[in-house]
Length: 565
Image (cartoon, rainbow, N blue to C red):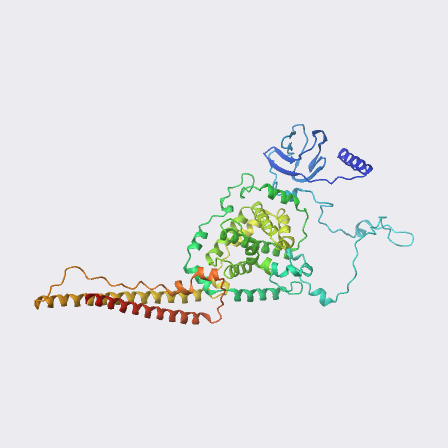
């Protein structure tokens, strides 16, 4: 270790003497293992084989090859016992080290969590930076009775800003948001992008309770009974989405981590993991709970988007994920798991293209599957969201507030906590009545109208058939009278069939429930008149349909009589 430090100092000294500095580049790397060895692959193109420097000290690993420098904090200890092996592929520029484990057969967990492996800058301790040690060790004092402080050079180049006096009321109204409610004041300097990112008008001064009340009011106004009933009764597209199998359902069990799924990361995802700055998060119990619930809310929105887009992201994907997540759209802070599910269910039935309760239930099952698959699967989902937001302006702001921190934090959380959350999610029952959108009453009213239309259609068909039978009997009676009177005999050929009216289309399907018309026109009607008004309108349309059917029956009979003449 001393040799490595001396070499590093000599390199820096020589660079300083030459009047220039080189920027150290973190190379692309990957780790794998077998029961006895850890394999580290480092991509260092355009380097000389004579310039490689390695340092191994238990869980601490360092690699230097100008201009690349890599420092890893490994999840287990490796040793140099003469069995290690290093190779360098000149054509590919890949340096490979196969180092023995200190404890043979030990499993190193989290080798895919590349960000957490990168040793953080400075101290890795989560302890307070300032501690009072006088109670334990005593403090040295001068002759004047003052405590003697360590002589340390003061940094006079500290960044300064003009002091602004804020009242207690002003300080109290500054609201927290972001990952685990750790951020504030962000949107104060982003007023132009505010309306394109979130739906909260003044996030810095709006209390959490006010944000929730505004969210519920906005959802109530956005809910469209026509759109909901259209997807309920004309469900061909919904059935296609229900049959879709997302990528996390195709994962095979992991051979390394028991109980988790084998998840592989693309080169682009690995590169993004290396770009993240590794850091620790000091969260109290309340903040940790809020972080887990907000993560669940974001994953629910992502699960719906993947299923509704059938695995292919599109230009609407950033909007869909953001809009369905109360966390991202309203900076919502949840207190329990049921609040998360109710919020997500309401927003699915209010905003996206496909609004069906079956998609809500499937998204919950998909999210439980993601959590059960392990934190590598959750990390892959977060990286996908990060990419979707990164490529959209100004949704990238949500990466800074939430997604980036989640990508770093999730690599260090306990897998046991994730499985507990998945179990709670599976055992939490969400019903339509929990959404408080009067869905059961609306569906009952619609089904009554459909049954009445079907009954009216059946009665109209029976009356048409009875009329045709009476006309046929009258013709046969006329033919027999003609034979008895010596008149011209009737032909045996059957009479020309009348044009019977087609069975009436249910008003719910033809008028009120046409999803193509509603979606193309973009109509988002409200339920201000209530279900009673909906039934009255549908009843009037049904009466009009029956009158038209009766007129067409009379017209068909007139044509037949004119042909007989």
